[in-house]
Image 1 (cartoon, one colour):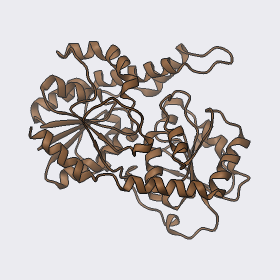
Image 2 (tube, one colour; image 1 turned 90 degrees about the horizontal axis):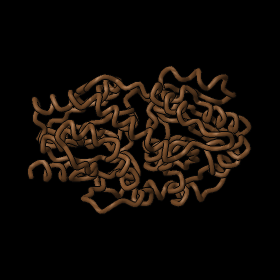
Image 3 (tube, one colour; image 1 turned 45 degrees about the horizontal axis):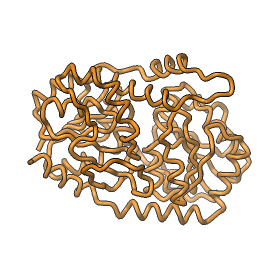
Image 4 (cartoon, one colour; image 1 turned 180 degrees about the vertical axis):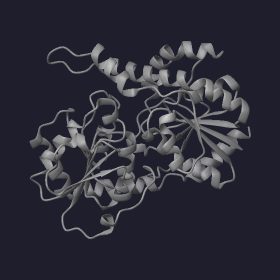
Length: 384
C-alpha cells in the first residue's frame, strides 16, 4: 500500500505523524511526506522520504500583517474570532501554494490513501479531487466543530478550482492521539485512537541529561513556531525571571538561532537549541510552556507536571483540560505577573498531587492503541 502524508506549517504539526509513518513502513507499506520546502530538514531527519511541494509561505510576514490590521483598542485583547479566521486563512494560503505539486505527485505516484494533519488542507483536497481515501491525523484536541464553518467559507474558492464543491475536512477516518481526558467535544465520526509516542525531532542525547542532579529541573519552552512568527520570546523571558529565585536548575529549550531572544539568562539556566524535548523532559520535575499541542501531549505522555500560559491567539488551548485532569496548572491570561508564575511553579514542585496527576495521565496515554493498530485501520481503509 502507498501512503502519502501531508503536513503544512511547522515541525510540531509533522512530528505527531511520524510514529504512524514508521509503523506503516515496518508493516511493509511505502510512505511519502509532502510538505512546504522549509520542513525538508525535519522530514529527512525523521528517516521518511521527503516531497517538497510549492513555495514557502512566510508565516512571520503574514502574522505581522494580521497584527497590523487587527490591533486591539486600548485595554482590549485580541479578538478570538479574528485570530481563528487569520489562522484558517493562513492554512488555506499554504494549501494554495502546495496543491499543484501535491496533485502532480499523486497522479504520478498513485497513493492508496492520503493522511493529513488538520491544517494540511492540500492533502484533504487532493484526496477528495482524486477519489483517494482520506485520513485526518490529529495533533492534539479536535476542534473541527468550531472551525468547520470558517474552513468551508475560506477554502471554498480553492476547492472549487479543483472541481470539489462540498468540503468535509474530517475525511473518511480520524486518527486521534489525544488522551480522552484532554480531548475536546467533537461531532460523531469514524475515529481510531492511537497512542501518542513522543517524537520531537532527531538528535543526540547529551551527557548532562544522564548525569545525577541535586536540584529539581524545570523545562521552559515556547515550542517551534511562536518565536518564528512573533520574532520574540518575551513570555519565556518572564518565566526565567520568575525562576531566578527558586532553587532549581532550568533548561530553556529553543529552536536554532533563537537563544539571543532570551537575553542574558540567570544563573543555573541551561539554554539548548534543537534538542528534542523527549530526550531530556523525563529528567524534569515540571515544564512551563505555551500550551502547544505537541508540547502538551509530550509532557502528558512522559508524566511531567505542566504550567501552561495559554497564547492569546489560541482560543483552543488545552490548558484547562490539563488542569482538570490534575496534571498541572494554567494561568488566567497570557500575561501573568512574575509573582504569579513563581507561585505556580512552586506549587507544581511542592504539591505531590500534581506529580500523581501527571503520572496518572501518562498511564492513560500508555493504554491507548499502538501505532500498529492504527496501521491496521489504514490497511482496511486503503483496501476498501
